Image 1 (cartoon, rainbow, N blue to C red):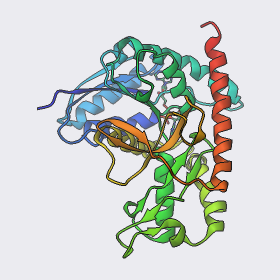
Image 2: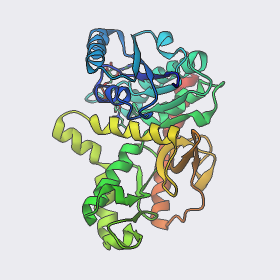
Image 3: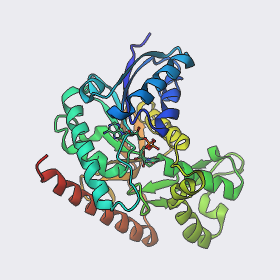
Length: 335
Ligand code: NAI
């Protein structure tokens, strides 16, 4: 019997966590034979709500859930963790400037990066979900000098899943038959959904490129891309709350693929530490197509990038570089 994996979820009294923690406890993230200890962190004013989540976790009676540590203390939360799902962040309020939002979150992720460095397992795998996710991951990483930068990532899998589902819908195939849709860059409006490499299987007698099956360049450029980019806003407009169950599902996909590996020939999108691939500046947390084996991701190399896509990559790179510069300027200020 394998020993329990210590998994931290921050923002544990929030919306996403309310789906996510039950998925983890039921074995969807790490498989049906891996027991877990859940570490749940939220801020003091959420303590009571957090207690309620703990009660429901008990009531769900999942056999893989060995125990729960629910706390508002950062040190207790981060001690010994092997997986860190950093979901909690400061939300953007009405009238709040992007810059002010970034500043508050730099302070949160600075503290959490330090806590990872001091208290977490040396090979902790970190997924940042709280927005601005890429730059929050970068902030945490800069404070964790003793941990490999390859252990930090940010979530763009929800964007990938949205794009994949949209293509499936368009051509009338199951989402499982849509492969290698890529999200490049920032988890923001400048993200670049790219179907150049994507293909369909099964229901088609042979492997068919998505571009051929869709056969509508105008739709791909002028409908598909903006619809993927704006899907989060569409959900907020409809639900008056941001995507939560679909975000939790994407978090499960991201971590499961990272730890248990991707299928042969299959790419998934993860925002990870750039090594300079595709001329993306080294050190940005940038969404790339990756494959995962033995708990390590590697960026898929040698893909052909069209001028149309390259132009969009430049825009998302520029945005991430600006966010990084701003974050670093806040980090250089005294606490
Ligand atoms: P929510 O507002 O329901 O929950 C967030 C929770 O985080 C709250 O309980 C809050 O008290 C807590 N929190 C705030 N600061 C904290 C800190 N320093 N330490 C621990 N907990 C803290 O929000 P929801 O819907 O669960 O979303 C969480 C984040 O995920 C948001 O930033 C949202 O923008 C982001 N998001 C990212 C997606 C992605 O694809 N990367 C998709 C959907 C949401």
